[in-house]
Image 1 (tube, each protein chain N blue to C red):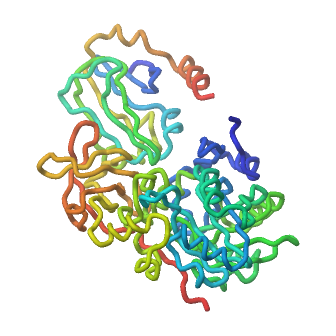
Image 2: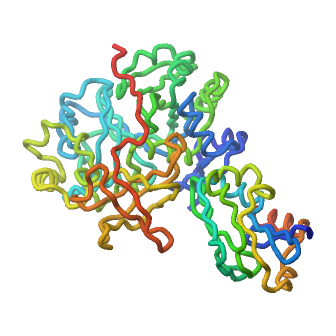
Image 3: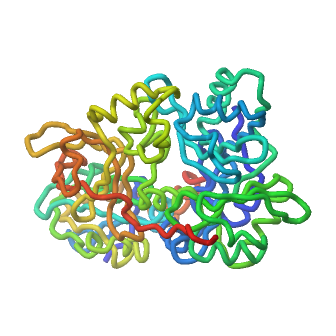
Length: 126
Length: 367
């Protein structure tokens, strides 16, 4: 498993072979508040880097979930659809959103590492 | 314009509030525990809400005051007993709603609680109608605190002895720390509770007392989910200048005695709508599954014709599912009517349902 990388849209991504696992960051869940609804991309669909690949809703508002890299969706996490509160509980672990087969691994180079993301999150939220 | 702060701003900060701007005020949307926990705490224990941004309009005058106010509000104010409150609206000639409000008979006058975003305009409208004969004071020296939930009576009564003797929608003056405060048994969450009008220099001490007794601060986020579960309207969402009380399904708030003779602003339109029916009406809506339909979501029938629009929609923590209110064409307003909600380009099934979503427990028979 590779190191975790992060996007400016507050998604995290880990890579195992040519399959990436993607979710939203703890910082994102803290900004959103209590999550009460999640919608995931369809298995087999193709998603484009920075394109919409799902929705989360808190009690306050809806937010799009973007994919940090392009690829074909090979798996989705139904448990967060059935119990969206899991996203607040373990956003960077068991509450992953979807897995995809990476189309172009060079897209990973545009993403931030943990230190860079923590700095980015701190700057953008203050 | 500089953002206004209530007298409890520092207390909110100390309690780790997240702030939003609401009607020109910096107000807490939530505290550290989050909206769902705050909502559930209010339903099971006791929540404290700073609603000091709302307007507290005191109007004093002789016996002609009630008569003059009856030309404005669709209420039987001449017979409103001392310390009794009524829900009502300020309307234009077409019965469009400028504001919804609570009016209470006090000695030598009335106290009217107004929405924050409307209070300045309401004051001008009322001043224009009433002229200079009456003393009107939109009192900025007083804060307004709501305490809501089943433990509220016990908690408040331990600080202000006697509030447990109030019935729902009545009030009285009480003493706290050598000051007079006006307490009404009312609120906007669907729970038993009180609203307390208290001078700005005493409010922090008062709320700290409530906190010591186990009540907790609750933000505007949970206030919104609580009032929506209780099926209560929020001005700017369910109510605005293009909606009438009949369309908003608030006919119950119009005194029966005023319906026969009219004589209040907007009465012609209201009587006409009562006689012939309004073309659209406010209803409760439950989306199927977990889908949340937010404000401005379009409502369709099964023939793809738009029949209405959502005015508020969220997740109801006590209902444990999505809930909404909106306006639909009259023929679709019956409970259990199947409708479709367009969310993110797709139509999702939903049902018209009875309000409230969450059953209330108001206290009516204390004395």
